[in-house]
Image (cartoon, rainbow, N blue to C red):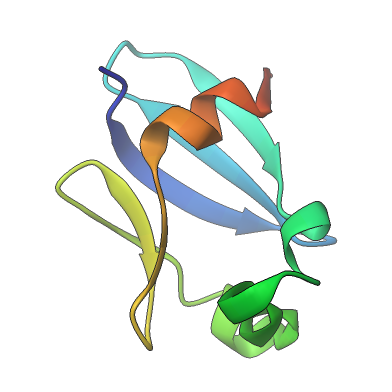
Length: 77
C-alpha cells in the first residue's frame, strides 16, 4: 500500500508528494476542486495548509485524499 511521507503545495493547485518508496510525484488537484467537500480547497490559503498524517494527505476541516488515489493520479517528477 502506498504511503505519503511529505506533501508540499505547488503553483496552480498541484502537490509535490514524496512516497515511502522514495519516489516523488506531482498531483494535479484541479479536477477535484469542483467536487463536493473539495470545493473548499479552491481557497489557496486552505490548499497551502496541506499536511500528512499516517501516510494520508490532509487539510484542516477534515479534508483528506487517500494515498492510493494520489499515487494513481500523479505523475513522477
